[in-house]
Length: 338
Ligand code: SF4
Ligand code: SF4
Image 1 (tube, rainbow, N blue to C red):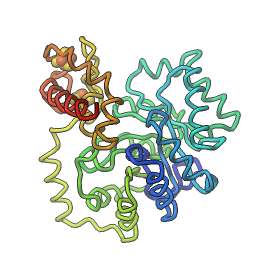
Image 2 (image 1 turned 180 degrees about the vertical axis):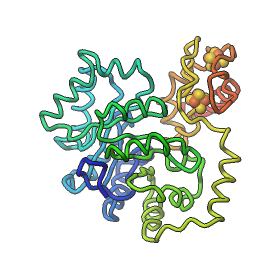
Image 3 (image 1 turned 60 degrees about the vertical axis):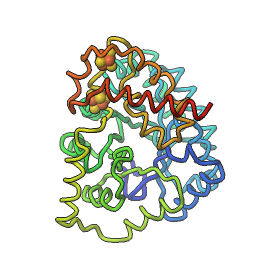
């Protein structure tokens, strides 16, 4: 399928680059090559996913011209983007990135930094003119922001969480993106791990045209499981709809969507990152997550339970209570990895 109007041709499902972080280099290369051999041609990673880019580079450099590689930068200034992009190119063993995305743009303030003089946007345009970037995209967990960014008409793709529990993107964001010919990339097809039935997850996603889900893979078996789903025509039965509704009922108000509406915390608690601790630990490994989320997890100790975030969370999550549980888990992992 085509990724929006980019004329980049990609497989119906892509490869999300987070879970390979917890694999050895040899195992990651094996999984990546298996994905490629089984028809997966779209690989999404990020500068901040530790050695994910390096593993992708090692596995796919020999078939570089047959795959579409997307990566991301979290930096908002020109120097930062240049530094990140050069590192990505080195790690990925390539001289161009097909799709370069501004990672997790959550607020107007961040977007303004990107767009201001000396900001990352300027540098991205230079890199594009030099042929180091083919297309620009954006990712966000904040729906209002994602819609606003899509409406700028500056991006070729938009990436947002989408699965049968987190369905919010399908109306305004996806409808707008389709109308404008933007590529739609669906991150978190398993809602960050809370949907444990791959077939059900993909039955839902395959109902939507021109949308590329990017499940993360950590084994040859997990690649086979998803690839085999695409070998069958998609049929969503009443029972499937019922099962999805059961999940929604059970999980709908129990997990954090990373929308960032609860922030900022007056005491500097990095709420969203800390709320995702167990998911990150299961995707990256406890040992790595302890280092990766050290700062946000330690910031939870500044929570005074003032309740400001509670009023702002649209899902009515008991944030301070959850943060305490996650901190305990973090401490257990830290003790175990020391
Ligand atoms: S309850 Fe805690 S985390 Fe929430 S805003 Fe107050 S101090 Fe911050
Ligand atoms: S705690 Fe609530 S408001 Fe904050 S990121 Fe999660 S879902 Fe959004």
